Image 1 (tube, rainbow, N blue to C red):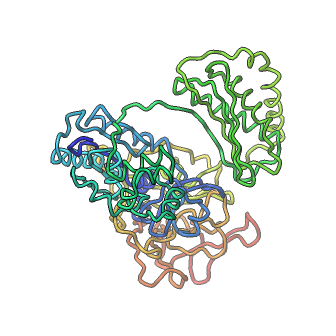
Image 2: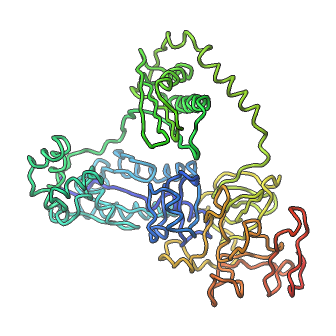
Image 3: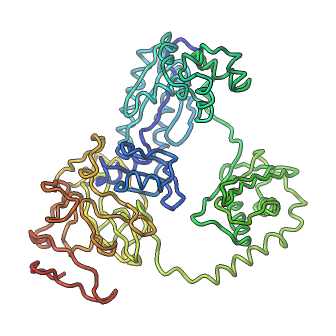
Length: 565
């Protein structure tokens, strides 16, 4: 180990959720959960406001909805996340040529290799400058750990969260690690932690005192020796700029178990084609084809076949995956399928035997796929996902707050605007279209136009109570993309009544409806956006009821309102 804390570990704070909050002003300071919104989806990232309720990464989405029913539930936007990640990684490469990315939001940097730091003081200055540069370029925050080894730098960044910097001085490592739980060390998961706990080992100090022989007896030679070294703060791993990929794979989890064997085969072919696209995108090929099947009872089966040479031919990989599927019993249903390729190389060697019969094996399922597709009715409406970027011909850019029952609710705001207004459209409205994400940081030469008073819930503010935070997007009230109640407004019957205020009425984040349950007296209306005089609503809020006689019936006037929609 080196004698200066010149290894830096950067971990962006709640990255996916922070990007969503930065791009959607109405969600700043509120609970946001990003992940799969289906019944079998999992949480990818939860904002710090959502973590107050116990929501965390890798949690089933259904459980997260029970813990935080009023949070905003959004689908990931990986195109935007990758673009911001590239900006962050570019800043890291300005510090040193040795940058080891671990994921989109996490990386190690060897500051000494780039001459950016040589002692504790210079390392601290480099870390502080990096955090300031990230905030200026992306508008986001990251936590920085500095230490003499990769293991300690990662532990330091965890202690620095959120939006902090922790430097571990050389010589203090063992004293710092001693009282920490064994789960702090990398490689100690729930199973290993329970095994050590049963042996009476719960802290890093007890792990170091147990001795190497005892740890080898408990955990095996490789794992035991590695943990003993880490307990003594020894980690000689270097920062590696380029890590070689070992495999390329894709997999899908299905909302409903697949029982039809023909459809299972078609899904495997589709996954094989996606895997080939990833292979070719990376300029790689492979010779070992892997099929993963998770059945209805959560049992997972893996089958593999090694070809005579590496290939990136989709017909060859499809055929190999189909042969592997023949050896798997899918009776009872399949909940997950995956296709992968390992044994990677940067050249190809065609499998002549596999290509000898591509027509008979590969085309038959394709014909069946065409027939199955012909039997299905044409889609009657477009599908809008919660969090999706859209643009309206009249109202400009916005994002989908939810959809269902033939309607789509859109909040019109940009990263540089104040919290925007909500409007509801038919899902097939020709004026509404998908759009590319907007940059999080505006060009300073073109300052944004103010749309209203400042939002009281600024980004980075301490978490508010569920009542203060309002009712979030996608609380799961009976529709496919998770449209929930409007922020702070109670919906009495069904989602059809959501956001159906007359044109010009602003349904704000903290709108207060007199007499409505669940909204305390004195609730703030600070998030409300001013409405022009010619379309301003009357002082008494007016809401429209459901059609009385079916979908096309006119809306009825509420007694005493004096208004007709």
